[in-house]
Length: 168
Image (cartoon, helix red, strand yellow):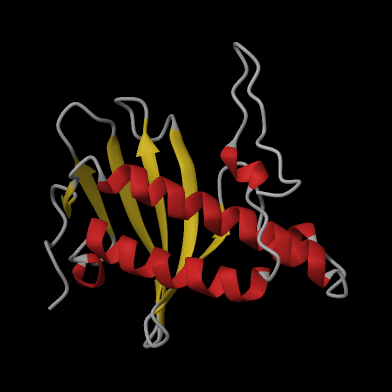
């Protein structure tokens, strides 16, 4: 493996794998991650396009997932996906990932999450392309890993009680 050293974990310390993944050509890798996120999102929520306003995902012995449809246009859809760590859904929703879904391009791109603002709020100077790309990479790589985690739990989504089940 040449001079590449594996990161060492100290006892009692948890180091995020995300900090060690740093592809050379982030623009190509970012596009691939966004394609993967689109596919995984549709696998996790097969009726995603049919939900009108919101849906909830249940999996045995796991926290619920909450989906909110924020915006819908002919070619895009913006949603927020979160775990609910409390019985009162307004109390503790994380990671509150806001995702723009490009229906025609089959891409899903993270706009922001509970801990990180959107790119436009963080980077006022569009000339900071490397920093912007790194920021987008971290957001979307996180979504990819979180969707992998959620897919292993066999969530089933349905509309909230009292809401029309699907858009016809």
